[in-house]
Length: 328
Ligand SMILES: NC(=O)c1ccc[n+]([C@@H]2O[C@H](COP(=O)([O-])OP(=O)(O)OC[C@H]3O[C@@H](n4cnc5c(N)ncnc54)[C@H](OP(=O)(O)O)[C@@H]3O)[C@@H](O)[C@H]2O)c1
Image (cartoon, rainbow, N blue to C red; front, side, top):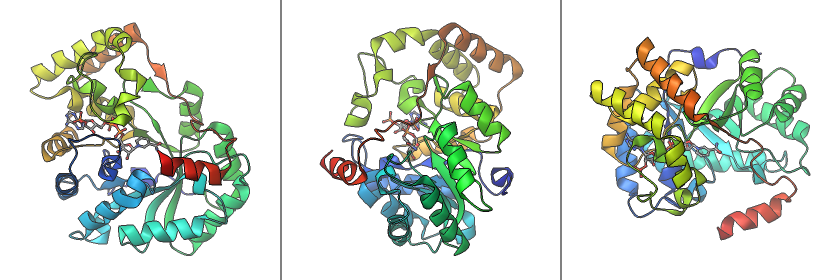
């Protein structure tokens, strides 16, 4: 059993998410050159955990990440990519991994994650045994999952001879959390929580309100940005603003510092070099006890929204889901 790879001091405690490098769905303010340069700035300044996926811009994110990595030594970064749920079968995985490796210009992937639970027509044991074979061949260093339930993680682990799932990437931020049971199960089994949407897609930045919502399809359909939620979470946003002003930081930095305190690995997405510089700076911020207490008091008032795992329709066969993804 592999233990504690994320306790290894060579992997940064805050990573960088690169869905935005796929460009699709993020609106007109996102620019490929700016994103690649921003990513480079992050890596140069120690944020070496990079998350991408084959579905982000249908390969574009992996290609741009691969370009950005060219100036660094292989040991300087840790790349996590993801196999789409609709490509997750023992028959498809080798080909999809080879394509990701080619786009990223790498010989191996540090962490290969199954992006969401595969359809019910897929054999989980066969898929994870094949992932184990690929790891034995040196093409993958660690096997992870994303948006997986306890039941499916157990099934995956039982399928492999001597490896275990090392991480589960789930939506996690101050206002949206997975169930207590899932978090406890992961702790007990040394499965690291990698937090996607750690900034609640900008909801926590203080830059938006119901009347001033972000552009782009991804966030237009995010129900978090509703009037009811801006009202519900106003006490929390106010506390974050208060702490950030007192310490000359931004609410975004407070959110990341708090998640780091909780022991999860946030992988914020970004749009500009300035934002990445702020994320870099948040890596060395520690919140005081009283700041943590005031955040937690506000959270007690507002409550949190439970993140659902098993997000995707598992009854849809892979080939139908694949065609659907091309049409979106
Ligand atoms: N496994 C999965 O199913 C899954 C799903 C979603 C995402 N992910 C991964 O998780 C990563 C992060 O999630 P996400 O992109 O959904 O949301 P996020 O990280 O919560 O939010 C990213 C957005 O926050 C804003 N932002 C970033 N830095 C900022 C700063 N310093 N100050 C103010 N605003 C700032 C930017 O938007 P604006 O500047 O435009 O406001 C940016 O696009 C993704 O890139 C991807 O790698 C995984």
